Image (cartoon, rainbow, N blue to C red; front, side, top):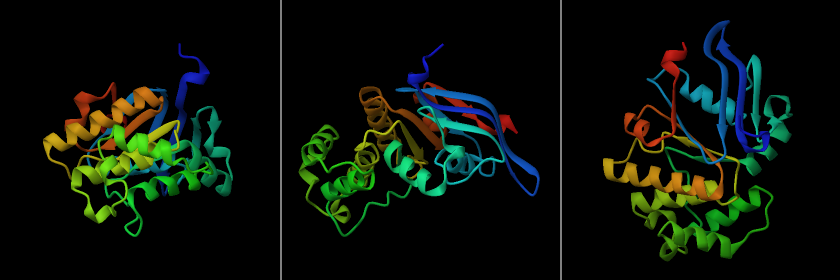
Length: 219
């Protein structure tokens, strides 16, 4: 039984639907710090809804969602915005790097938004670890696809969140690039200590994760 302090995400008796029709029901789910979970299933099975619930963008009709011991279903909207910025990181399918500022400044801005003092040395160490320190001062448009993916990973973890969510992070990547991206974020998860939740229909992700939650089997 993991200690409470080691549980990054805990979901209990969760239910969500539209027009009284259940879309998503999860009785119990826990993810520990450093653990990797893939949430898979075909289109329409509730993957995006699940991600939005965990990120606090939707509220369940029933149940609780705790991130690092905080029940986010009880937070006011402004409290959730602040909590999300501090405790959750997201790697999007469309990377959403700000095009007008450098890679380094994308990371420093992420720290500011998390209400953390910008730490250039920490940002550069992270970029170096991901093999893109040489691209720190270039605009995102100058990056290759693989470099941009690494920059997006760096931005998602620069504030040391408790939970990192990957939103279809491999769907646009070839086999080699997909494996590389997943391996990088897994290594960061283990060393930094955040839980990793990959929401995807990409079956290539399944074998590389600690556990798999198949939402199609939940319905």
